[in-house]
Image (cartoon, rainbow, N blue to C red; front, side, top):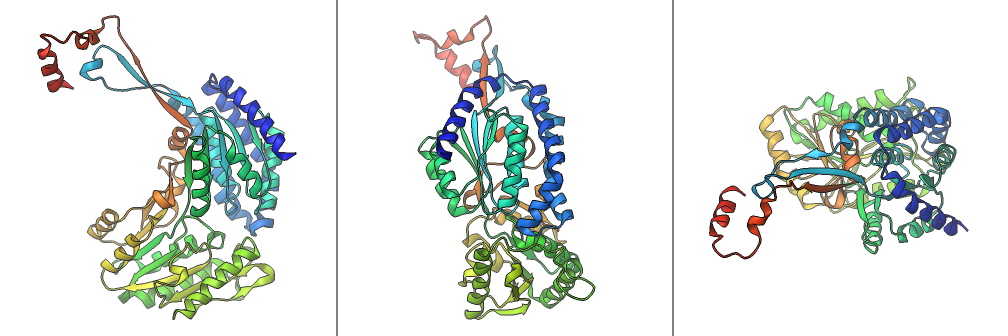
Length: 467
């Protein structure tokens, strides 16, 4: 049975984690290089699988999935020795003669549960960090993106020993069984609702958790912005992977004086980027919705918005046999409609006019903290006000999505959009325990605070002054 096999592998990894604790930077780098070679070997199969699951073009797949993972490997290889080096910290009066260090030790056996929307990148990115930190790892790819899941399983089985890295395919029941096991750390990427279930399950074993979730990432375009530039960037960020991106612009607040101009430029940008010379949506450039269930959910959101008084300014069509929903712009969208209450995760863009920034700020701050926040403005004071007045996992000013591609920046959510960070050293720390170690000197100043306390008032005076 699958569960018996999972249990066996988990126990093997529990034993092997004590071996990996001793792994050197060179040994971990060798493992990362092995993963890199495997990705190159399976690259064509990865592209074919992404085309099958999501109809991603080869270019988009390379940019957002394969090259993204390869660049993270290279970055980890370049910096791993420095990351692993114990970090010296400053002394205090009570440890003035001691040597103080922070050691980065592997958490142990880690579980990584990946989503279907970027099924290769979002399993490889935390895997790279977990390897760099010296852990044993069990992977659970999404069964919804079944073609990519199969390729990932083949890649892992061919490349690694199961007591080091293992991969298990399967439906929800497999994830539920895995979550019953006492992992040292769980890294989950997916919806907020499932994230709550993961955290609840992890609490039974007091497993530490990283949650990469989502939310309604808003955009504000003010009257000083370059509207044509903003529209082109928002069009790309909204429609890459047909909008099935956790940090995609969810809805846009546009200064009323620029509303018509923005919609015109947005339509023009979408047409340039995703339509062919005959004026038809180009399926070689534009991804499909993952399955019928999600397509039906998106069309129901449009219908509900219209029922509540919204108007379809552009698009709104669906080709069911191709699971293609055309890029859609909604205007006059009531705030109580479903599309303004839940993450859209599709190619539908509600555009909301505003006269004063208090309107978008009040709406944004009335909802859960988003994974991303996008601002288009040339006014520095406006930008400062918007960043100071809101909270989000990350933010971009005069662009979208690009913050995720810099491994020098932490990527993660806050509260409802997640907890913990990944990429670069932040991913390394996520899968590491920061262990404080104090090396006391032969001359032990601590004796000054030992009892008896008679006539030691002067010690307290020193501590008050220098601690």
